[in-house]
Length: 195
Length: 195
Image (cartoon, rainbow over all chains, first blue to last red):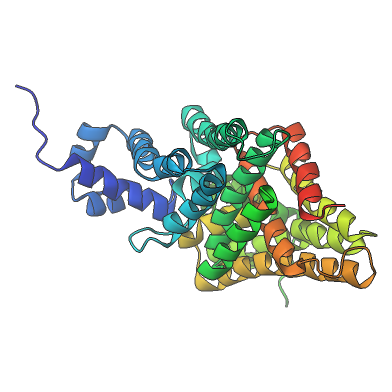
């Protein structure tokens, strides 16, 4: 007879994701996971494998639930300029949402890369290169549509915007105010895409 | 009779600093510290207090040995433009030095802020605000000296440069190449201080 899971998988994986995001990988103990996931460790191991496997699934959920909103902000914006502003604003949403611990699980995990295996490191790295590509592609569309000048250095601006997004996450963790981050967004959009 | 330390304090604290920088705070065990510092735990505790106290001293050493070079790059540059380029280049030195584990202990610790106490968090935050002030002050001197135009928005550029420095550290951990980071520096100096 197949094992029936008697818990809400979304809710349980969400709890693990939030704990890793708050504390980091090694600082998250199995005991703390049991408490937050409201499961005993044998149930956690049966459902998710070991801690490393659970982390991989929590990170996949983070990409799907949180970081996908960065791609959405880029793709759904009507103009390249709005796409750039939108991706910066996602940092503010991510950091300041009352239910979030602040910062970003992806950036934390990149900095904690020694705590992770090669597979996880590769998936973290690919998020950064995908962000750069998504911004660059959207800017190139802005050139094609005549919104941006033909000589707009899209790939360079894509790289700069990616650095600024990640830098905003770090300085947000240094308790820079929301107002200061919003001013940084305005200045960065004007600087990267001068009118 | 005063206790005589029979080890090279600089060397021992350096070993602790490198271990925290590589692994993060919680992921650094006392056993690993014993091996790297080549001291038994009672000697570590006698000389540095508990792990939290040892970390504080390792972080102070990091500020003094590594991050001071960011301030030096700003203060010793002959022009504001060179100061900006110099502070960005410090990220490359920090990340790629063969003896370094990559990334930055300060950024790692900011992201791992839940693992630290309020005093450590404050000292990490103040590093970020001091970097911004140091860049801003140097740009203001550039305005006074006629290098930069009178309407140069020094504080805004100081904030943007601080975001880019921290963002460069994150993307360096995502395995962006040295060449790509150097291109990012060129583009960022030209963008922040157009000629």
